[in-house]
Image (tube, rainbow, N blue to C red; front, side, top):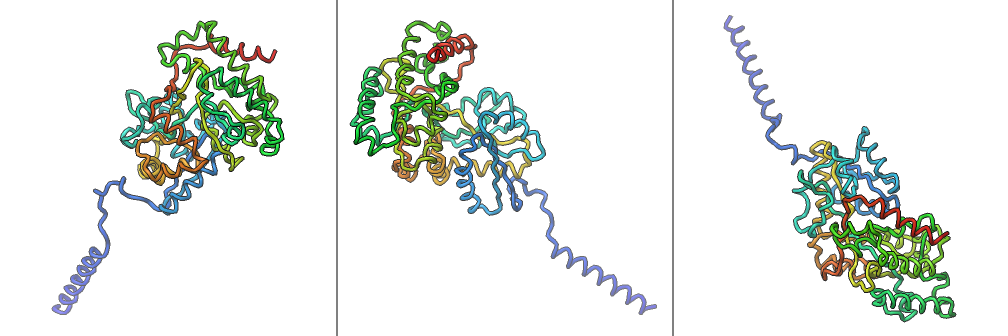
Length: 416
């Protein structure tokens, strides 16, 4: 019996010892560790953008981020702008919805309200004043401002220098007309033909069926004439003086352009035209086609006979999907903070995509990168903003159908 008792006692202590050893080598699960601080391996971000042409630029930026954060994968999906909102709605409701996607504010806050994360606490504090107003309501801020867009005349500085034309003439309509006359006289000279063999017209312009869209009526014309939403109500009258001003500008452009071109961006990029009425969102497409072209931007003289201010506005934003798992959502926020709150991210947005991030923390290192000829327009936009020589773009909230109809009839009358 004592031997059996001793055996059982030894067995008991042996089992107890095993339990003690097991408890020492097996880590306890700390349920108090917040998931927000945990990074799972190979977290994937799916980013949905509204411009197929910029896919390569975005991918270059993402590749740099992934090199620094190898536990993150970033995938892009791009569709044309014309199909974007419909495609975005489908993707948001799909099995693999985007983590981050682009919105334009305004109606988008309603269209995608069920998928928009409130990013109020994640936007850098030094964002330009009112830059996020199109994505802000009483419930919060639902988009991170991506770029400050400038609207006006983009022109080829090499052509202007060769013609010895002072770009200040853009600010006065009568001088602008004379400037175009001078340019037209020189286009067919031997010197110009040798230097710019493709140049045929002063203005680049799309085909007539697309002209109303290309001119971007709301962006270019309305804010110059009616600088606040309150004054906007007067547009419905389409008064005689305003009609004459628009006719004068439209005639100047259409009489000195070649409307049969299908793409005014292609025409301008290939130096077949010296000037286009466009916004800075086209810079990427232009430089992709012609790496050597040198550009500048000037105010569009349309709402008054003298204009030294440019139209600026923030209408492109990055939104974060509110339905993401907490870990994926935090990775998306980290990526956004890297883009907009670090010198590296801001510099890449300017260098790779030709964007103007609307943040005051543009450091000396970023400014130095803007000294290159390809970034001249970006630097100009910041200068217009800092000098307060701009008119703020706004989105009118009143019914403008009558005005749009009258304006469209005026436009199409030029082709009848």
